[in-house]
Amino acid sequence: MPATLDRKTRLRSERDFHDRQAAARAHDVCPPQLAFADADYLEHACWIRPAFDRLGDVCGRKVLDLGCGHGMAAVVLARRGADVTACDLSVGYLREARARARANGVTIRFGQIDAERLPFADGSFDRIWGSAILHHLDLCRAGAELARVLRPGGIAVCCEPWGENRWLRWARQHAPYPGKQRTPDEEPLGRRHLAELHRHFSKVDVTGYQLLSMASRIVGDRRLVNTLRRWDSALLERWPHWQRYCRYVVLACYNAITA
Image (cartoon, rainbow, N blue to C red; front, side, top):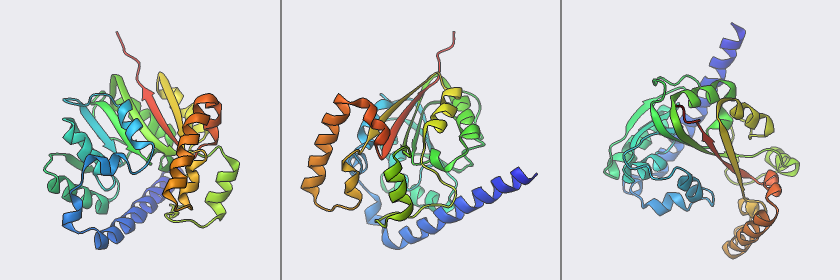
C-alpha cells in the first residue's frame, strides 16, 4: 500500500508540473505558431534527426509517441505516413498537441495515459518514439510495458538526458542555466537504467550527443557551438567510449524477432 501511495503521489506531481508548463506555453503559443515545417522539430536539437533515422521508414506502420508533449514529433511521424497514437500524462500538453495536429492537417489519436500502465494489447506497435520521457519513469515498470506493446522485431527509440558525467551532474544540481526546470522525481539515465532496459529488450544501442557542445546551454555564440559540434563528431568517432561523458543519449531498443 505505501508503494502504491508513493507512485500515485509521483504521478500527480509529474502531471501537475507539466500541466503548469503547458499553461505557461498556452500564453505564448498562438494558433498561427502551431503550424511548422518538419525541420523546425528535427533540427532543434542535434540528436533529434539521427534519432528519427533510427526508426526507419514509418510509412504505414503503427507508431506510439510516448509522452508526446507539444505534439511536434507526432505531427512529423504522421506526415511521414505513420499511423500515430500519441499519449501524455498532462491534459494541458494534450490540448496543445491536438491543436497542433489540427493546424498541420494530420490525423493522430491522442490519449491521457500512464506510461507505466499502457492500455494497449501486446504487440500493438511497430515503432515507439519517446523524447525526454524515460527519465521520468520507473523503468522496471515502463521498460516491461514498452517491450510488451512493441511487436516482435519492433524498435523503440528514446532520447534521454544522461547522468554518468559527474561534472555535468554537479552542474545540473547547482549551476543556473536557461530551461533548467525539473520535476522533483526525475533522474537522468545511467548504467543501472540501461541494465533494466537490457532485461526487457534483446538489444539496446546507445549513442551519445553533446560532449563539448553541451556548452550550448550557456553559450549563445552559434559559430562557437557549431565548431564544438564538429569537434564532438570527430572525438566521439575516434573515442566512442567518451560517449559516457555526453549530456544526452539516443537509445534504440530492439525486440527480438520470434519464430
